Length: 75
Image 1: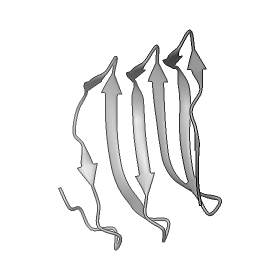
Image 2 (image 1 turned 30 degrees about the vertical axis):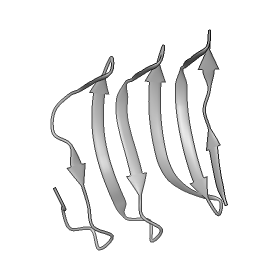
Image 3 (image 1 turned 45 degrees about the vertical axis):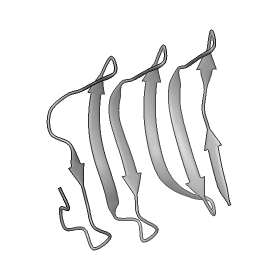
Image 4 (image 1 turned 60 degrees about the horizontal axis):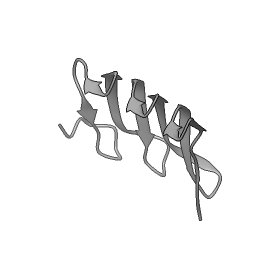
């Protein structure tokens, strides 16, 4: 089962969003007043990174990476 915890403030996503599948953390994202902000990460079922993205006020910042479940860079 999947559990998604999304904090809101004044009707907008605000704070650390987490997604867990079978109690394992599979995604973590941060929002500020409805906009993606900070480092967003996702993990494969085996615990290896699935993606890493960085945002500032809703815009991509720097490099974005996606990984295969074996840990090799996909893109």
